[in-house]
Length: 565
Image (cartoon, rainbow, N blue to C red; front, side, top):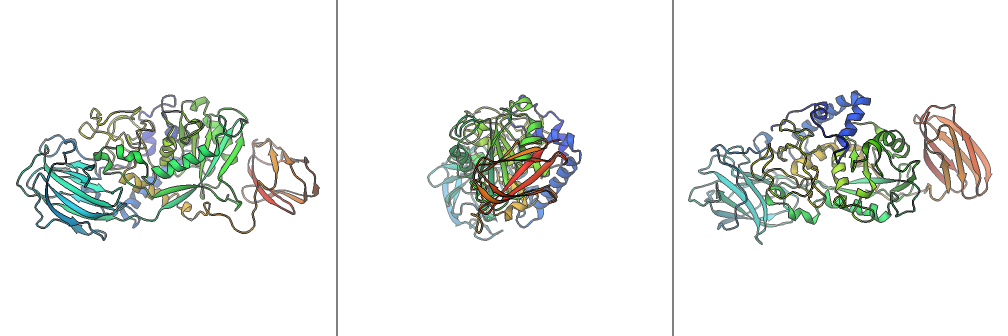
C-alpha cells in the first residue's frame, strides 16, 4: 500500500488553508492545540502508528484479509502498463455466460466453470448479501486488458473499475447496498468484445460486525433566545441531526444512489449509529440536550476551548459531545471543527455552527442536510480530509481507496472531475466523499478504507465508548437535575458562587469536589424556602472544574462549576 506515515505536523505547515477561507476548522484547531501542547504531536504520531498496525493485524479489521500491497485498495494509476488511459463505465450490453453463487464463508473464492469469460460477456452472481464485502477480480495473468462493471438485474450500474491491480487487470471491493443478484461484466479495454479468456474470482473478504451505538450529548450555547429561536435551536432540529448521522454512518442515505458507479462500488456502511443520551454521566435521566446561556453572542476558538468546553463537557470516554453555537472572532468563517483522538480530555468533541446543524429549523443552504456534522464526526473518528490537508500530490489521507487529490473541492461540481493534477484520469477525484468540502447535497459516502479507519479508532483510542451505557434508560434512584429546581450562577465564576433554590426543600446538603475527588466545601441547611439564594465563597481555591452535588430529602443533583482565576 502506497502509504507513508507522515508526521502530523508536516501536514499542518504545507499549505493548510487559512481559517478565513476554510469551511472546516479541525486542522486549525489541531495546529492551535499543538502550539499549546508540543507533546500532542507525539501522541498523534503514536496513534497513527497504532492505527496502521491495527488495520493490518487486528481480527476486527476490515482490511486484515487483504494483501493491501496488491489490491485495489492501493491508489490506482492514471495509465495501465500498456500506456492506456483508464476508461469510464462500459454499457450494459454484454452477453450472458454463466451463473455462480456468491461465497458464504470468509476467504472462500468462487469462479465460473470453466473460468474463461470472454470480453463482452457477463457472469451472474446470485446471493450477494448486503454488508458483506466481496473482492471481484481479474487480477493475475489474463489474455487481454480487462475492465469490470457491475449491474443489478434491473440494469442499474453499481460499480466499475479499470486497472486497479496496477497493470492491465481490474478489481472491485464490492459491498452491496441491498441483498440481490448482480451481473459482473468483463470487457476488453475500451469496452470492446473478444474471444479471449479472462479468469474471474469472487472472494468473500469481510462479514459485518455488530452495529456500534455512540451516546451523544448536545450542548446548545445560546444568548437567551427562546427555545426554537436563533442560536437556541429546537429539539426537533437537534433530532434531525441525529437522524442525519444515522443515515450517513449506516449508508441509509438515499442520495448514495446519485454517486456514479466508479465510486459507489467502494462505498461502505461504517456500522455506526448514534443516540441522544438517555442517562448522564452520573446516572441521571436525560434527553441528551443541555442548554446553556452564554455570556456573549458569538465565540472564537480560545473562549470555546477554555470556557465553553471545560465547563459543560460530559465524560468523553462515555459520550460524543456536540456543541452548537455561533462562531465569531478567528472562527467566524467556520462551519464546524472536531478534535482528533489523542487531544485533551476536557476539550474533546465536535463544535458546529448552529445554523449548519441538522436538516430542519435554523439551517442555511447549501449546508442544510447535516453533512457538516457528518464530516466533523468523521474527523473525531480519526479521518482526515480526503486531499490530505496540503495542496499537491505528495500528501494523502492515510486511506488507500480514496483517489489522491490536489486540493479541496467546493460547491456542486459535475462528474467526472478529470482536471485534478493528481487524479486526472477517469473517474477523477471523489468529491462525493463526506471528507471533502462539496455542498451537502453532493457529499454522500464513506469508503471501505475509511470505514476501516473509523473501526481502528473505535477499537483503539475511543474504545471506552463501546461499554458506555449512555443510551440505556437509567434504573434505580433517579438523580434528576430537573426534578430539583436549582440554578448556579455565575458559571464560569471567579470565586463567588450563588445557588438559587426555586423550590422548597429540607435537609439540604451542598458538597463541592475538585477533579481529584477532594471535598472543598460542605454545608448543611435544615430548610430552604422558595427563592432562597445561598452564596459560597471559593476564592481560596485554584481555577478549574469542580463538581457541585446538592442533596435534599427528596432529590439529588450534580452540576459542573468552572472557576476561572
